[in-house]
Image (cartoon, rainbow, N blue to C red; front, side, top):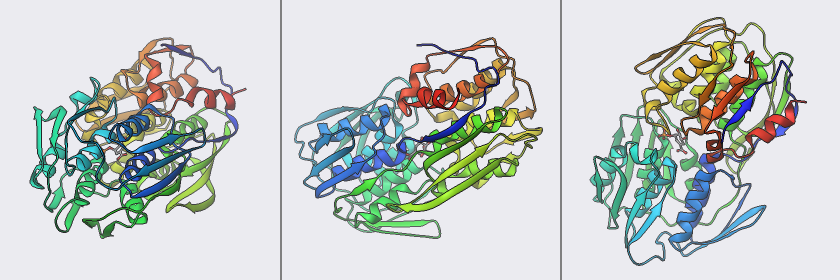
Length: 427
Ligand code: S3P
């Protein structure tokens, strides 16, 4: 499906509530499915990726009742009732594949995890390596999906990861729930910590101090959670309001976990007019409302090092923001962006260039020179990447001529409500 975008200077005005966080939705359904008892999850994401996790947990034998406003999960505990060999399709979802691998390695049956074309080309050595050190047996060709996982008993490890990846960290911590002793995990920079927060709230034997996380064999107590809005989805609205003249919006119920808020720090460094209202805590996660106003005179900045994992999914939309900032914005240390749903360095650069941006690819990031007028009047492509699709849509809002985004339906991976929410703000 293709999507045409032309805005003609109309500002964004009003208030929206951002839908549920994708990362937390995955964790809620997966962890509830291995917790002994009945869990209740409210405000679960409608994205296809978290639904892949849900369907897999159901296929493995967790009892899942999915209603309009809540999900009720009943489980016997950390060993799924499934008996024979089973094949499970993770679709486009790296989070599903990597988190489930940690759990499946400790089960009493064998499983094969498959994925779509994009997921089957993404690197899995990062989880195969630590799981193998824990005694797991995993078969794959060239460390890519499909992954055949032989359920077995696991031993603990002390693991230091050279990449800051919450998916790898979560995989190892989940395997640690089944291991014989204390597993220790350390990563180069802190990645998102939703797993640590949720597992601790469910009674896991987990500690986290000074970047070192430990976990040992635990049974999980059931979960009662209301999932906050997704800052990675809010990011498209934040940038849209900052760059479309005269905009002023409030984005309600956004998760503001420190390990996810890099985009707010970058926006602040650029001089953006953003205010956080009504900061509160829900189920261990910080939540707030975000007031964003159009900002003239945004300035460029450098984005590198420790902040990268806290904004890794927002880089395509930050690159668009940088096209509207005065000066040269440099993004570096983000090489892992090439391993996402698409090569997001190469494709963000090539597609934004088509809109008229002055942007250049580097091995580990990009260089953007602003401020540029985006001319538009072209066809661009999502390359089957939801975040690229939405970034291009927001770019289209400030293009002088209409653009057409091909393969736009991929927004449904994380944010099926995207276009209707955007339209509700533009009268
Ligand atoms: C995620 C972690 C990040 C992120 C992805 C979701 C998660 O990936 O890019 O969209 O839910 O754990 P990595 O852990 O591979 O960096």
